[in-house]
Image 1 (cartoon, rainbow, N blue to C red):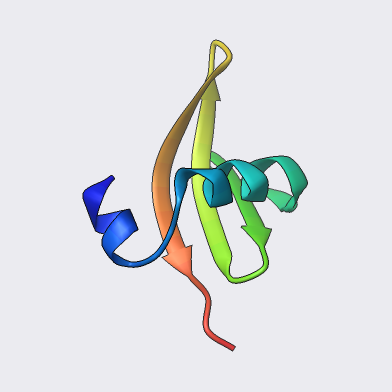
Image 2 (tube, rainbow, N blue to C red):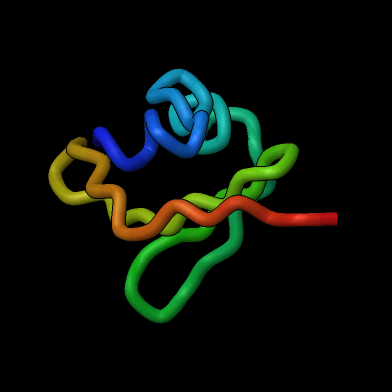
Length: 58
């Protein structure tokens, strides 16, 4: 979590990306894209497991 804060990504931004972003299926989970953030995650038993967070440039 500290690395995300250093890069200027807050937990709220991840939640917003998952809830409001464009979601597509991947081989092992989902990919949500919202504004400049991509979040790869899984849902297991109602629990969201974040795999990767990526800042998309331009």
